[in-house]
Image (cartoon, rainbow, N blue to C red):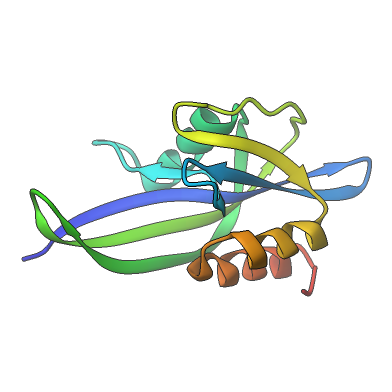
Length: 143
């Protein structure tokens, strides 16, 4: 029986005077990504997503709907093979001010949707492409 690990996070968006903006983080490896992290005991997956977004970016958000789940396996030094699931949600925020948690990530910023897509395509993780694409589609934006 493989060890199972669940993480959760979100594609965070806000409307700034009617203009849509997407939040992207720069992770500790310098890659573009979304705020996410491991589930803690007793948390629902949704609670994990919102807590991690708040911890990493200083944003309190509201889950609009699930986007998708990325599943993969990796080797862990202690547990051996780990079945990893990352649950992504579309999360709305009404806050503008971002506060990056520098222990965990290098930075966080808001981007126009097209710019966010370019950044993801050039500096993000391949398996996040369809998460952002799906998130944007749910917001009515085709890339």
